[in-house]
Length: 479
Image (cartoon, rainbow, N blue to C red; front, side, top):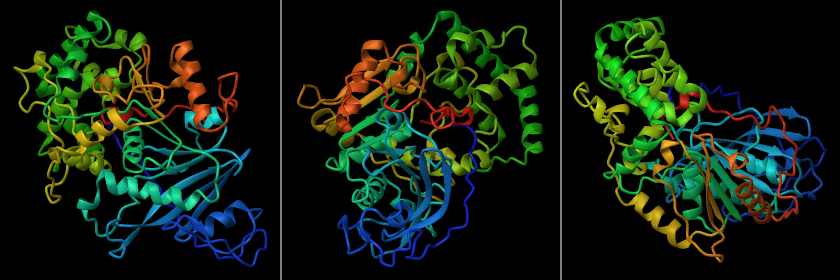
């Protein structure tokens, strides 16, 4: 993910206890118990019922045909082990269809899209959708920020409290889902709170079990796509480093024109090389190889400007500027403390590279301490391999993040599955699977949600606005 999405925070409006239905009493839900206090019947307006939850406040409601869509703040403990030691406001959204329908808990693992949208499982089951902003992504960040409280267990506990608060309103079955870091988030949630969800659909979720062993990624780049396309990419990368001098001049002018600086990474030269070394990964992660291979610049004939513009398209020159890194500090912090990050060799660049593939520590301000926990991912991987139930992992054949996949427990009693979409990249989904796999995956999702269908197809019709893929180019090199 190579340039920031700007999150606009609307003014939080605290809503009183009297809602649009004119009720004079409210139903309060306590996340610590997940139960209702005395209040009105379930016929009360859904906004009143949501705002009756302890710690819930309204930012705004956005109308959408067939749904109610709410952007909300929810009060969370900074430290779930010590709830008395401060709180912060965490943004969530609720795409409400009907309390009689099942619900999908969607996470991106990053910030929050505050416009109505629908994850693929939500469309398949024709249900409600709850989406959560990951802790420490602004504005859902404690102040002051104690970065030691940003870990996968704390984040899973955020999700657990939200589920317990909303389950009394949405009493049917729940599925969790997310893509990339969102798929990782859904997996970690299941590992720590396996009794909450009735199924998990995790898309393109990497599983870096041993951060010191990344040879699977190197093997991936040796065989992905065609030899001609791989060679063209390698030649273009190498040519960019050969032309370090003139391309850095363009980069400096670009940064000056956009008010961008390089303090965190340690200078323009480091940022320049980081962008160029990422090109191979970013190309396969998001570019459609069927058409993009033909647009790779010819290393012998391309002008400096053509090379510069192509790298901007594939990766993005703002990626490692202070302004590009800052919104993603929480991701890089997690990559350098628990999640791990790829360290690929790219031998065709070895004689020209000054820094190699740089670690997450280089992308986080030095004022934030970091220490890697080598046990965190091993614990999750071990749990998924032996204890997972009703978990589905969907990968893309041409996606480098899938080189180290999750492998759930086998056997009918576990009802877990791994699917690979042929020719797909980091945007792989159920719709892109082979016909047989698509039918099987859809049927399992429907069954887990308690809405089995003989047709094994999405229950809700496609909606251009709700269901469009959001494969942001500026998010290309983060999971």
